[in-house]
Picture 1 (tube, helix red, strand yellow):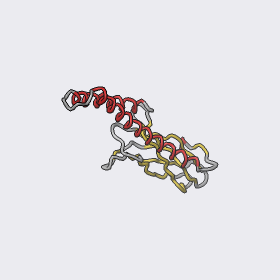
Picture 2 (cartoon, rainbow, N blue to C red; picture 1 turned 120 degrees about the vertical axis):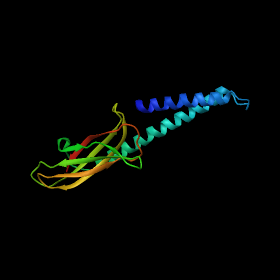
Picture 3 (cartoon, rainbow, N blue to C red; picture 1 turned 90 degrees about the vertical axis):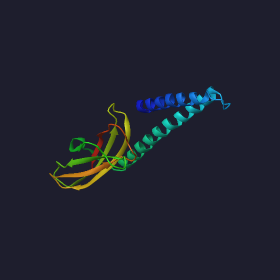
Picture 4 (cartoon, one colour; picture 1 turned 45 degrees about the horizontal axis):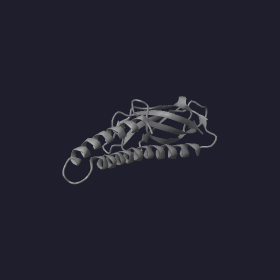
Length: 161
């Protein structure tokens, strides 16, 4: 689990513990320790779901990138623009590919969406097909899920094929 996931789970656990402990002090017959245990279980479940979503997105992006056979490292040909959050909560980043070869090329680009500490929040693969020699083309990377807070877009890997 990422540090962000651990911090998020800890924050949820503390908030849930305080809320449930306060309600456990009432005369409804429930024990405080049983209520705290339920809160801890719920917080753990929420953190696990977040980690599972990132793992799933990362695996899907990796599978898509691995599908490009005979790819050549093209990290120097690709740049990720500043991320922007849409009205739907998904984050986008403009990906610019500059083909410096002598022939038309296609690119597959792994884009990692990260928090300021470098923790992976989401990952997507963007393809940019048929970029003419000496030309640049733009594409848009869009997060698979809603992301909140400060997000960076980084090129994780780029293949020219």
